[in-house]
Length: 240
Image (cartoon, rainbow, N blue to C red):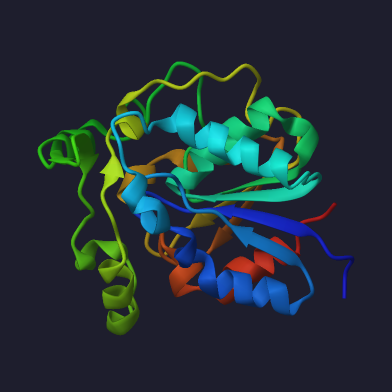
């Protein structure tokens, strides 16, 4: 067995730490310290939803956790939306990050919002779905068929646990002070079967960035649920 590492895993939109259940089991079985964190206002912390929750709040919460636990040299893994918060965290506290992993997410750019990055037609559709929950503008979660999970029971189980996501996380431009990865080793795991429309073109952009280790896997966008063996294997193969 390789020397134990600490993995900190961040979930996608509408999701919580529970989405990492199967990957956590596999990494833990190999002797590693694995922590999955929910975001404030979403998933296990849905009761904390409020108008003030945005990417800056989620960033601060993540940094606070790393500092409170005095974690260093962690493999920080962000799935989908979680990759944005992982990237922001690495931008701010690189001394605590040993390796940044993005799973089928975007490469964050200074001054850009998520809605400013993803295809305009998808943005238009999502804006039509916005509603108010607990005085907060949110994006409701998508229907079960859009999860790209072939197993119908797993898809239904996943869908039952989804919660609305604060709209501000999609509309507020971010601030980055360093290039992607901030000098830390970086891996991008691309889900290629099928490709997720929201990430259209991102795989090609990443392959043109020589400092990013590109790893395609034959799985759908929610691979941490539908293909945990593939994800765990990729995470275990990350070099120090």
